[in-house]
Length: 307
Image (cartoon, rainbow, N blue to C red; front, side, top):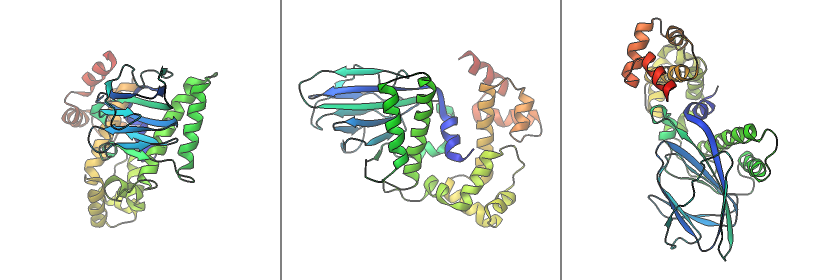
């Protein structure tokens, strides 16, 4: 798997969810912070204003996509000066949900989607993102993103056989297209540094994909540098500058994160998990895992199963 695919598969817990909401002016709602969640919102009809927790109001028009990667509080309204009432509907609480709020003015229809994340396994890509990513609908820009939005809206308007699987897959696709649009620097000014630069850099991108594809391989800085086509020293400097961690520190983090996922989602013995993520002994793996997660692998699995 490539890095972005891994990020989406890795950080989500449980099923995704979506809510289709019809608002009629005048209206304004405040939505509380939901730590450990990500959300994206698409304007299907009309227009409205997004009021982030910090920053100026953002005008949203038909086809605009907004991504809130950190679960911050926000408001939505037909007018930026409108007082915001506490929300009386739960955004993205079910796979299929809809709500309507009658008024006398113009209608705005919003598709709100999201899912929960585990704060213990948030990938640093997510942490590098701003509080609000706004991808305006512009002719010819991000056609795959627009297509995913149309397909998702169609499934929610008219659910048919297999809709659960289709909607879940489309929500994952929408998430990936949003991240791709941001890191490709398509619609927003995004300086190519940090993770944006790492993913855009062919050499570092090759190294990251190698780590994600084969976390259990006995990688060294030299072998990763050779894979990237760089000298050992040059690779180490560039990787650390862009990713924010040394190559071996990131490799260790990803190995343990992958191990935690295996412990949660499979019944493979701890010794097998250790071997699959590159540890030659269960003892060494247990010590490294406990340093990262605060508990031994076996206890981590029992707690995850009980939850």
